[in-house]
Amino acid sequence: MPELSKRRSHEDPDMTDQPHIHCPLCLWEPKAESRWICAPGEPGSGCRTSWHTFWTAGCCPGCGHFWTMTACHACKKSSPHESWYHFPEKDDIRKDVEEEVGATA
Image (cartoon, rainbow, N blue to C red; front, side, top):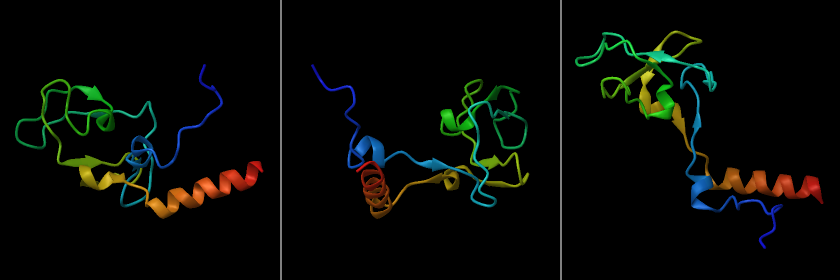
């Protein structure tokens, strides 16, 4: 039987490939309950669907429009959708693991 207490390794590609999502301008982080509206603004958009844009990588589930820009709920400015995804550096991940191990030792 596998040990339930075993943690996934930070070297696991599934863990290191997960981005931290925040506004590139003000660093606001969307919450699980945050929602965006597919409003007219880009050609092919405007179906009025409400959804969490980061659960679909910017694709509206109502009409299939891929949003190139995403508005921040905090600073009210729009940035390219792809610029919201921040991937950790491997050195930062190693440092976090070393700190966790040192804290539990």
